[in-house]
Length: 108
Image 1 (cartoon, rainbow, N blue to C red):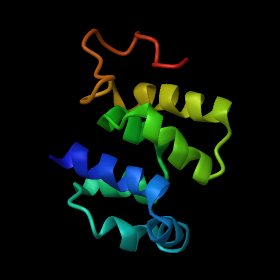
Image 2: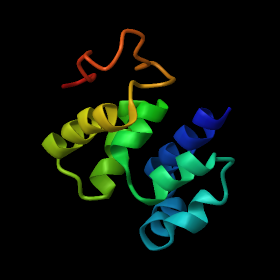
Image 3: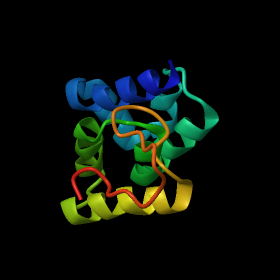
């Protein structure tokens, strides 16, 4: 259920102007409204796109958060690659890696 909560939080940034404004001013306070693990919360608050990708967040919603954070497209893709190198294979979700970290990152 936790991946769902993190994904729902990121999705809310695309749909809810209040959530977007709070994200820009107080991301930790916004995160407190969702049932996240400490690892998920830290990744969200620090805008760690690579870590959130590894945690299983869908790239289609994650790219909108990255844009909101001012992350350019090529840097976004690199951050996902770096996330896999740093944190290991994608753990959950549709991008879950079952054969190790040598796989290409989706969209790369």
